[in-house]
Image (cartoon, rainbow, N blue to C red):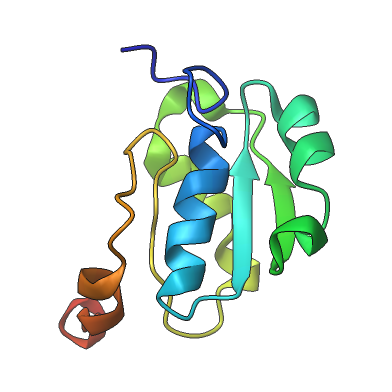
Length: 108
């Protein structure tokens, strides 16, 4: 399977599916770190209004170095607890497990 969040035959591209599944769990604000195809992804997502959420996009020019660098790019905007979601990982239509998830044990 191509890991590109914009490929595949889904009704929504992968990244939109992840956002909409998280929205079902009560998450309505997203920081999306883009690298590969960043301009296209930002243009498609916009500010999140069409999905009923708030989206802030950040460009990671070092996207080939790995996901950890992408999280660091968003550091200034992450002032409270957050959930890290990957567009490459397909979100299921069931958001109940995400809604019940406690991230407190992972915060240091």
